[in-house]
Length: 104
Image (tube, rainbow, N blue to C red; front, side):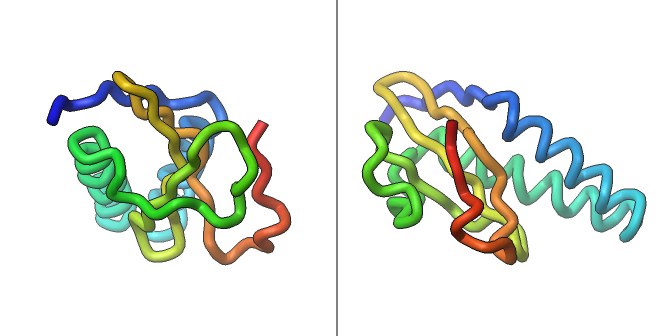
């Protein structure tokens, strides 16, 4: 199986940076590093096996086949794939109201 290229959408990248900064400011370097490593390891897993995440039930009905993978305590990566790429569209805090999950 070919390794797919990872493409971060702007919103997902911004949430990643904001969340990493929050961990650093509020929990310290060790927690921020743990968060970053967890994301990086799981993004690598997704690039090698894109069907590893479950179909995201909150996004049924979209043309893309959105999948999600819980990657850190309260965070899941939401993504979709084509034949060559994996598009990371959101880092979702699972503690939020599910009705707020909107992909544009």
